[in-house]
Image 1: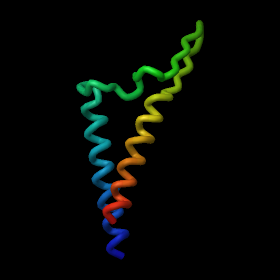
Image 2: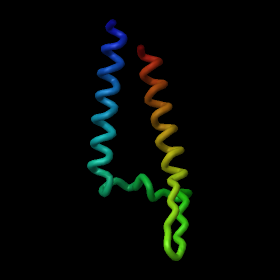
Image 3: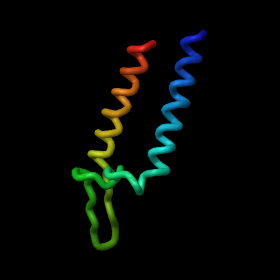
Length: 73
């Protein structure tokens, strides 16, 4: 049961860190959602936006965090 408790605490810490990053988003040098490689197409009456590089960056960061959690468990 202690493994489940540690996992819940780790997820809570992760949520706090994500919340702090979102709150400080305008002051960060890297603006998530506006990275080079994000696809933006502006038509006459519509806009298509797909944050490709942002998705890749978040995926890599989450993979590293989850790998670290699994390694130290």
